Amino acid sequence: MQVIIWLEVRPPKDPLELCVGQRQELLIRVNAFGGDSILRMGAARLSPGTFSATNSHPRFATLQKKENRPENYGIAEPYQGERYDIAGVRPGQGILTFKATVGDAEPASKQVAFKVSRCDYKVSTVQTFTTPSTFLAMTMDDVLIAVDETGQLSGTGAPDWVIRVHDLPCQVRASVSETHPVEMAGQITDEGTLDLDLDHADVSVRMAMRCPRLRGVSRTWTDTWGLSDRHVPFPGDGGAFSTIESRGVFRETMAITVEPVERQAVAFVGSGLLLASARMTTTSVSPAQVAESSPSVAPAVSPAPAGAELTFEVAGGPFDLLDPTIGLADQAGYVATLTTTFEGTVAGEPVSVSTTATLRVGPAGRELTLERAPDGPTSWRAELKGASYVKEGDGPCIAASTTVGGSLAQLSELAAELPPLFGASEAVSETVDDVPARRHTFDEASLLLATPAEASGDAWVAESDGRVLRYRSHVDAGPELLGDGVTGSRSVDYVLSTPERPPAIGLPADCPPMVDAPVLDDATDVVRRPGILAFRSTMAVAKAARSYTRQLRDKGWKPTFPAEVTKSTALLGFRKGKRDIAIVMGRRSGETRVHVAITR
Image 1 (tube, rainbow, N blue to C red):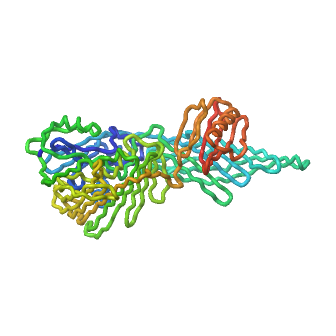
Image 2 (tube, rainbow, N blue to C red; image 1 turned 90 degrees about the vertical axis):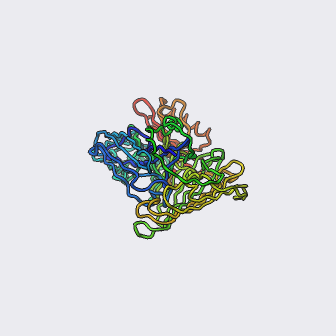
Image 3 (spheres, rainbow, N blue to C red; image 1 turned 30 degrees about the vertical axis):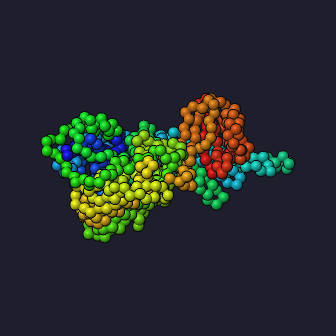
């Protein structure tokens, strides 16, 4: 059987654009074409040393192969391919060349251009500071953060302040009498995170009190608020982050967004795989038809020379599981669990590790949890209402817009990480959670293992639509299959359930949800991100405050305090259910800027 192979690089960007000081993980996967179909070359068909990589211009970017940890080869987690880190060093461009050799097939190569640029970022924030007597709100719009050649960040923001004094027996007027810029500094670390420090100067508030009921009692004084500095970490491409912190009687809320001025190709690369693909047969098809049959991959391949082929001993049973994701797209909701366990030795040392991935899919979105034993960490990712959320261990929840090609549906369908089966046994009728099913037994011949190994397993598929209800496999192998210095047993257990009520997708308490609030009829430059809503209006502040109050009331929001409105500023508070929002308006350059932030 003649086999043609080609490489796929994720993220699929050419050229790959990086910022100076920014680090990006690359995944390189091998595809093979044999007969009339495409087959993902997973851990069962590859071994360490299959790949090589070169960089034409290392002075502009460094390329480093990541450590060959057990999970790289599908021991503790589903196989992802070879992983490399590219880091921007200084402005310039070059070519990365990746090569792979599989058996006797013609070696494959893939070139990816990269471009390193100086990239600036812009920061927008809404912060509120609350005491029993005062409510202080600060906004900053599109503050430019410059990045130098070493990845150091620096910038200065000019804050706009609005203050409200809570109802008191006497009349109190308050105004911010002295403001100072917010200094921002930080760096892009070697790990590709963007660490930003916000240095808040003190803010002085002038207070004027009159007591009509107490003749002659009036007083004017100045309060100075000492605001704490903030440290905020983001992935290299920024995102959205929000916090609500209480320190005694003082409460601070913050919603902040950070994004490149021109967004770069920094995709979330995590636990996901693309779809496993279909059956290997012996029909002869040209390389041009290979490219046509998989437009998303669009490989550039050359005809294999005569005699270049890989040989697999395929089982002779009647059942083939060509696409383990069959039937999932028709489900209103489901829960899939994939547990992968390894027991053996790595470099002579005993290792016992496992990963449990749980995917919950519902009409509103989906979420994926990865629990690693024995040492963790736990990773969590979700997509809900057009936003993508990521949380690693006890770290903060970071939100961003869902990227094209980077959604959970495209990267983390657990069934897609199950290897296809070829020639499994005849069906045995059974039930799985009261669902009529057919059980098929298989061994190493059904997995098309190209190296010596012993395997056994069972697959249960629904009689109604063929979806995989359960999949169990156990493989005993050595370094030829599992990687250099790795020997042991790898077990996989996949379970699919389809509850009557689709799963509800929720967010951890520290994740910034989307602000469920309307905008004014003449709103322009509308920005909706988790935790923050901003737009601009031509209305005067007073008119904008009245109009927006009507709209919020119509949507079920109720005021939490009387509106504070002046000629140039407005401060509104509303509640709906358990959610509080603050609306800050400010007049500048002939337009009213409106910021809406979640405060509870």
